[in-house]
Image 1 (tube, rainbow, N blue to C red):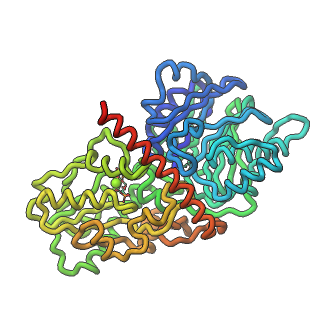
Image 2 (image 1 turned 180 degrees about the horizontal axis):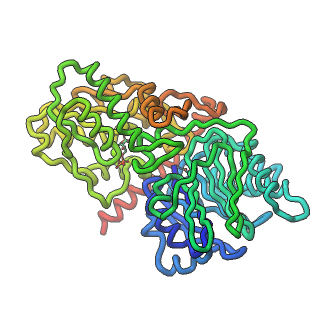
Length: 504
Ligand SMILES: O=P(O)(O)OC[C@H]1O[C@H](OP(=O)(O)OP(=O)(O)O)[C@H](O)[C@@H]1O
Ligand SMILES: NC(=O)CC[C@H](N)C(=O)O
Ligand SMILES: [Mg+2]
């Protein structure tokens, strides 16, 4: 998951894009970039790091223009260190094109070969997004007649992208001298919303991964970009859209509602906050069924993402809800950090226990999910060190047992704590006296309750069903090797940084 934004305004967009990236920072902490368009010239600045560290005043001043796109990255291909893989990415033929991608292609290796052999295009990084950009560029080239690019040609090129690309992709792009293009994969796995603002000079449009970007930048949510649909806004601010997929259906990634998205976002007609409250209710019902003698004194959330679910769970059980952990607000999300050693260290730095909430009590700790178990292991131990009597643990999502190949970086089964273990074994592994997970059907129902029109979700990390139909055991094996290698590289880099700091 990454954060993407595109805007066509009636005045400069550099500050808008910067502010939008800050709001989407939770979707990617490894690199950030902005491209603006001034006539047919692009201005770009990007680099590794958090948004606030990547952009200096001089960089912002140089980002001139009334149209632009921006990206914050959490890599699922290539590596976090590679500056060349920071997005947006650029190609100069057949037109100047820049692109920002959220998601992950499952056939990027095959496409890479095709690019090289048939399309005579060179891909210089390990980023699947560079492949996607080149597929778009090639399709634009193929569809363009007499060197003129018009609306039907642009939409035909997106049809070509849908025919060739597999996996998840929500995209913002700009074509130099023409306008802003945004589209979503035909299964609608990753989110993309569009909104508008009225100004004395005309309507402005903004597309973004999450509606929270619209709210904070003064835009009104109009709707979701449909799966398979493409949106084009020309330089004069005219808005066009077309369904570019032969077949499409809406299958949003359910993990967005569990953890990835901000609670104040609305995506595919679902308020993330309400979905999380519902998850708390469903989990409370299961706890009532499974833990007949409820000897829980207090419910404690693990900040941040579990808060709404934990609060509602406590209400439902009629048990006190207390904030037992204080979060250091200057430390980012640990799950999306590259490398296990840095994640582990960050949990302790990020969360600290308030002893009085634990001493002598039976505590039920609630988290939104348990993935590698980094957080839960540390937290259970911290609860015990703070004097808890019994430590129970509840997860608002089911066990994460399968790799995700659609834009969340959990590619290897071995790293998942629930892989090959039943609930008792996982409880033992994290040191809890009792562990309870949400059921998958109950999770789906919790989201569906907010928008009953949603009939299907992308749930592969919970049930191993890969809806793109092309994910073979061979592909998963290949990914394990490839991503395992880059995880080790990240680990070594983090260790090196640590050694350097120690040596200083
Ligand atoms: O089992 P793990 O591998 O530790 O992953 C799961 C944890 O990671 C996330 O928290 P994170 O710190 O990333 O973000 P948050 O502050 O939004 O909860 C999530 O909310 C869980 O707490
Ligand atoms: N998490 C994402 O959406 C990642 C986008 C792209 N696959 C990358 O690795 O850069
Ligand atoms: Mg968390």
